[in-house]
Image (cartoon, rainbow, N blue to C red; front, side, top):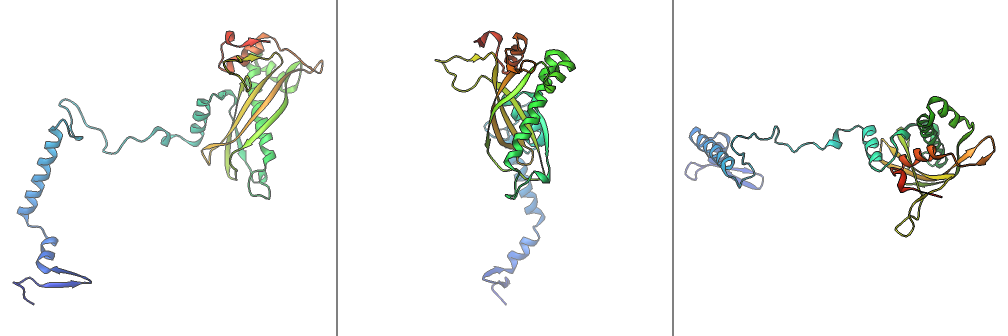
Length: 254
């Protein structure tokens, strides 16, 4: 086959000269050297050009890696990420409670039964009460709070907002934070009630890496000796204010 010594090879629908195929398979040394020189010179010129993204000012060093820095969140474990996110939202770190999801938490709808979350929030709330008791009077006061001796806390009401279903296997991080309640604004400054406060809660899923459930509740100071709600005193209310991230003088007294 002719054509000035260049044979044509039929490759499907493409026709390629044999000479081209041979050159592509083995680049002559002279051509390879010219390409390599051109590439190095062009790169060096880009390093010297202040307007180039490759420019490295004299006396400085380039990045350790050509890849962009890895985001810090990518290196966090699910537990670390959950604690960081909930802390950013103002939840009390002393309230953080890990809850393992077990197979028996499921119902026939193939997710954790809605009633289970009330128990999860209860466990987290009791854990928070223990931390509060330690602040008010050490282990003895903490024990009194959870045993219902003297002045302690009692749940008045709770509402739950289910944001996403949870399935086994998973670990949940339960968090709480006290607050002054809804409806506060410029025309209605926050006031701390004498005998109660509001408590917001959230549940973070390690598997989904997001908040899957929220709640709001009303907590009442209760005298178990008199079987009546009561004013717990300034020390207890000050501890609650601190956990609300409010200064003592900012919360009014009613």
